[in-house]
Length: 143
Ligand SMILES: CC(C)(COP(=O)(O)OP(=O)(O)OC[C@H]1O[C@@H](n2cnc3c(N)ncnc32)[C@H](O)[C@@H]1OP(=O)(O)O)[C@@H](O)C(=O)NCCC(=O)NCCSC(=O)c1ccc(O)cc1
Figure 1 (cartoon, helix red, strand yellow):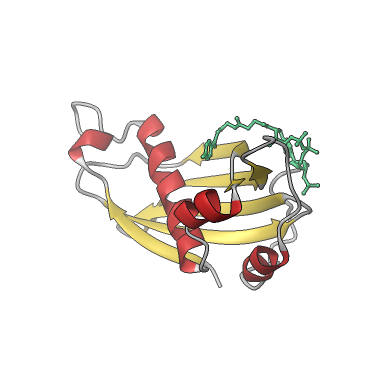
Figure 2 (spheres, protein in one colour):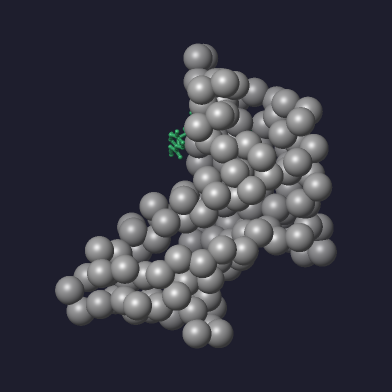
């Protein structure tokens, strides 16, 4: 099942005319990913402090469809599309007022914060990620 959350598009996310400034979207998107990990029981605070695991982005493909406007209530839909040895493929859909504003195909990788090399997803995290896997779309986002 996809992870859903909302977040308002704030004054500080926009240019002076009130149109969303896309670099702001990236920061918001990372916050959504952080919330997703918390929702499956692996807060980034715990991952970093207790497990020494980081989750850097290695690929991100954004498609902008309509401009977001200050005051919009952004609705995020995050779907897990693949769990590799150390990689995690995600698809994001971001809507407001019933219309899709932008989408993203996103790959992150589990890394050791000590060696800064990839590491195999530990079994407990893999199990949580896999339980949210959605394979209805045959397209593999990160290829
Ligand atoms: C992630 C890496 C350590 C992986 O390198 P290696 O340890 O040599 O591993 P590999 O090359 O074997 O790749 C490991 C996996 O990543 C996948 N991978 C690696 N690079 C890519 C790219 N560019 N595209 C797609 N897939 C990739 C690869 O297919 C492997 O997948 P699995 O088969 O599922 O294991 C290295 O690629 C790296 O350091 N990249 C730079 C990451 C980065 O700086 N990103 C910029 C954003 S920083 C960020 O998002 C962030 C998040 C959280 C923080 O606390 C800090 C920063």
